[in-house]
Amino acid sequence: MMTPQVITPQQMQQILQQQVLSPQQLQVLLQQQQALMLQQQQLQEFYKKQQEQLQLQLLQQHAGKQPKEQQQVATQQLAFQQQLLQMQQLQQQHLLSLQRQGLLTIQPGQPALPLQPLTQGMIPTELQQLWKEVTSAHTTEETTGNNHSSLDLTTTCVSSSAPSKTSLIMNPHASTNGQLSVHTPKRESLSHEEHPHSHPLYGHGVCKWPGCEAVCEDFQSFLKHLNSEHALDDRSTAQCRVQMQVVQQLELQLAKDKERLQAMMTHLHVKSTEPKTAPQPLNLVSSVTLSKSASEASPQSLPHTPTTPTAPITPATQGPSVITTTSMHTVGPIRRRYSDKYNVPISSADIAQNQEFYKNAEVRPPFTYASLIRQAILESPEKQLTLNEIYNWFTRMFAYFRRNAATWKNAVRHNLSLHKCFVRVENVKGAVWTVDEVEFQKRRPQKISGNPSLIKNMQTSHAYCTPLNAALQASMAENSIPLYTTASMGNPTLGNLASAIREELNGAMEHTNSNESDSSPGRSPLQAVHPVHVKEEPLDPEEAEGPLSLVTTANHSPDFDHDRDYEDEPVNEDME
DNA sequence: ACTCATGTAAACACTC
DNA sequence: GGAGTGTTTACATGAG
Image 1 (cartoon, rainbow, N blue to C red):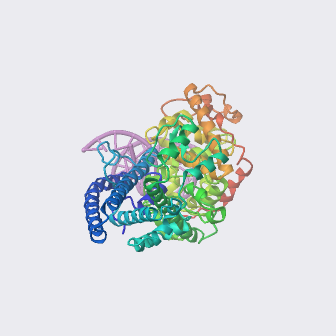
Image 2: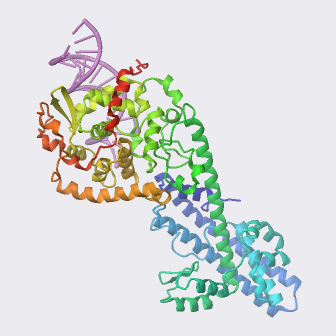
Image 3: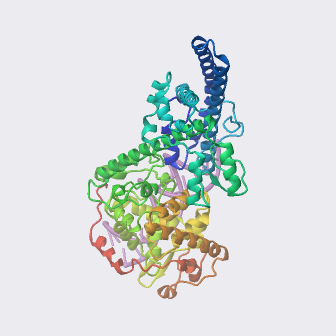
């Protein structure tokens, strides 16, 4: 019985998976928080009913010995209230956690943060179960007088009279999830003896007991606090039970997430490998490599990774053509927008694999023509290419550009002419195109929400920075740096890349500021060249080649003659 | 609503 | 004259 008022596991999944919440999703969450207020009222009613029911029971069964029973009832009620409070606090902690991660925003007026008398996220059924469980545990404890027996709530619940049925129903996880070995002070002490300076419940001078956050200056005081405030009692037991449920739910969510991820990857794998065993996609969410084993992660193959599994950002126009390359052949020239290209969350997946992926899969690369052109030029040994060489680079690097030549070639020419960052230079054997990095940097400040200069410099960085990788990095920067940060956690290579990128970013920032101070990459051929045609702002050759010094293009120079491969190979112009 | 970046199409001029 | 190259304009689209 999952009510929409609580943050359901599914929603938690989304939160955990997406890393980014759309405004709509945030809105939904906020609305849910508001709905929690209504839920609260229901809880209060339920609580009253429970009280009445209990009172009635007690009156009927134990008319005589009231004092003790009443005391017991009072204790139970207190425990229940504490239980509710604890649930509420836990939920708030979750919300706070989400907030800290930037996954959830809660408006100041929202009722989620201020403590409420009752839990906000519990549904009546759960509360009822908890209530029965707590009371049963309490009863058992009272009757047996044995504190230790209450440690295993599962057992005690079963042995208790009335609520045992519900407890059983409620405990399928508990039974497996560790016999509910409540964190007794004794146990805590043991654990801390093993690790004198670390305790799961102690950190940053604060007691991390759920909902506590008491300040403990040192570990000793924390232990005192732990033994005094969180001793074995109903409250602690209830809190423990709640925590158990939280963990169980999270585990459940994780399992579901994994399942979903597996399904996604399986699905994508089937399609992407359909035409040819295309290598890995470049921009799957990095979390894939984290959550899945290497063997499982292999099928990842979506170039345009949806931020959310349920709501891919890949537009409809791109959906089919992205993976099913066979469809591309029949589609022909498609006039479409790729405005999502910069919204694609791209992880720092294996560069070579990415390259291979686009080489083989007729997938539209999620990069602008300008970026690609620039990269083609920067990748060349002398940072200059003829138009035809640019064409060849496109066809060589992207299977996608082996079709619809008229369209994209026109686009390439259009971009070369349109953007000031591309400078045409007369060569002895004709004209070549170069990149003016300064202009290129000027070109895109608005698109980048983060740091505009990052992209640029990221793109110009690294010897192993293939064109794809550069574009990937740009995309990463335009989306969220943490993406490749997380990726680095799971992959040493990626980690190196990530750190290298960070270094590069730092250096590049300075570089950008100080600008043209760096030396030119030594393009000797160009020195004998006069820029015959320069758009609007004349640039002397040095300026044109200036900021490229970061780029070391050793990678592709040897096989640059591969251009001929596609040169000789007539480009398929089937769309015309 | 507006601006901007981008993609696509097309017309045109120029050169080889 | 045709192909390739380069420029320019126009329009559509999506994002901010």
